[in-house]
Each structure stands twice: as C-alpha cells, then as structure tokens.
Length: 100
Image (cartoon, rainbow, N blue to C red; front, top):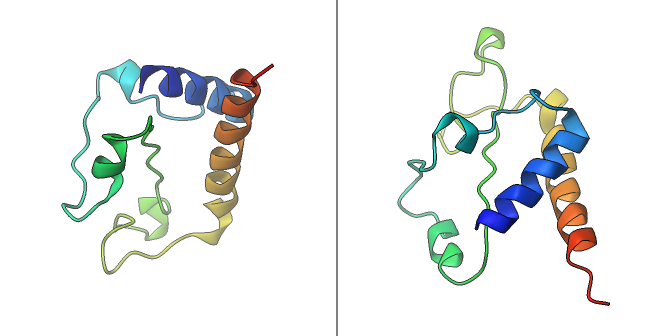
C-alpha cells in the first residue's frame, strides 16, 4: 500500500534517522520471495499492508540463517529495534489518520 509505505518510511526516518535502514523501494526492490505458507500475502489482498523485513543478527557475528529458517538464531541485542519499528509505524499511522 503506497500510503502505508510512505507513512512507514517517515516513521523509520524519525526513529533511526535517514540512511540507517534499508529502503528497499528506493533501491528498486519491490517484491520479496517469502515462504509459500505465509498468510501475509492473503491478508494483503484484504487490508493495506507494508512488509518490513528484519535481519536476525549480523553474519559476521555468526548469525547466518534468515528468520524463517529452522536453524535461525536471534541476536537479542537487536530485538528492541524490531519492537520499536512496529510501535513507531503504528503510532505514526495513527497520528496521520486521526478521525476528527
């Protein structure tokens, strides 16, 4: 959803600063390959959505598997950023879409 993407971009810029997150759309990546069992695609057909992928840890620190891989391990030092991202995106969208 273009409006939700724009709102999410504003939220992430405010939270982390310009250039401190990967803006996939800005670099031309608009489609992702995800697990076939994901319900996200189905939900996206019915409500506006935005996909915000997270890394689970840095490869140089031994975190070499993605979030949906059975061998994935998560670096707890970064989990707060994921929680903050979701909260900030929600708060930004709510503040921009208040019913008066």
